[in-house]
Length: 272
Length: 290
Image (cartoon, each protein chain N blue to C red):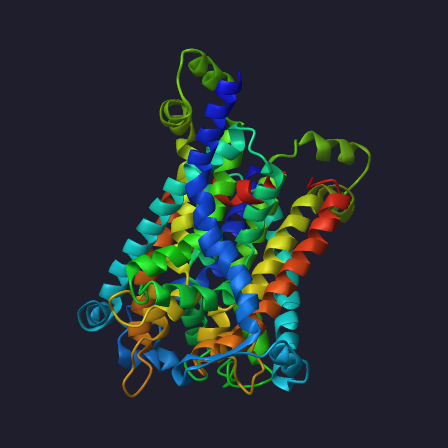
């Protein structure tokens, strides 16, 4: 019985590894010399090479794009958290007038299609002279990161027992002190979940980045990868290496910070 | 008491104000502005800017390219969401039985979901390569042109989308399964339920609420999808994978017709909100959403 159990467990792992195979195939491609890439018969026989990574890191726009993506992702996350934590606290704990309508509007705005808001945001960023800048892209990405963060955090705060705050309030603590010294420490895991999702959203975002960036000054990784240069033929090995580098933060989150990621995704969807 | 309430009101304004101002500027304003834009003809490079009323919409009503894009969008969404739902439930059931290596299993599962859409597009572009792609190699060296054949491009695109979205459905269903006490199945087994009967009689009804929510999220995402088709097929061949989002983006940023492109964006917006309303109605009938 235990033997059969173990075999079933292994089978599931094998099936999931097979599901992830397109990624592992790209990983292998990124280490395969060009001469072997287009001759499928020899795909398993070659010794690995680092040449594609060298090309991508030394002679492509990807390093600049990685820097832009890290910067834009981090700043979007920070801005969404800085604005979102106090707002979520107010919505969870204070008798805000029109609270239900506000929450509904916030949920609805997470469903806004980017293709509908991209043209007004384009005109807005043009008027503010923020096209092709980090600031412009951070503002655009905040349009989807902020409602997500507020929605998630309002739920996480409601899960914290209110009695602790009431005791501190009787001792004379004001709303800001309560938020800073009582709520925030208890909210840390939830905040980590929300921040991860905000960062992942900004890191993966393509439509806004494609519309609002023009040069290496602000072009993010998805745009650089979509525009990856090939002179005479498609450089499949280089593209594979660039894909792997673009995937590193999402992989780090899935493998290293899985618990917080899973909590964020399921909390956002399974809450009443 | 009144003094405290007033202070409370001030605190609420301070806490909530900045976020609401940002949401108004970056969410509500663009949502209204795009409707206004869609009533204008705006071609910035020629300095054209004039009010045309519903002209873009009446043009769209007779525009074959628009109706093709609408059909592609709906077929893509239905196929992708349906397959992701079925495979996601299967994956969740398998994961739920898992005793060892759950963390590894979840890592393998969530990998496809967490990657940027452009990476997914590049991955599948290479897998679908006519001569050297793994798909054709595994099909015994056939030379199918997956992304160039009008009959194959949309199915190939759907497969790539299912690959990256199934894990989301699986995760939600799996999380729900974890909250159901084992006694529920044991009791059903005592009553004589087995195999398929256990699945359709006990497990699926328990999963119904979470699957409705997964259906809502997935449908909204599929209707809004853009990066995968834009990079993988660019809408081709012969428009067979051109969704409304791709048509809108091309109108906005390739031919620079801000008003006309906005009108297509408004159609996507209306479609998404309509679907959200229908689903929320169903959820409410189920007593899930208040």
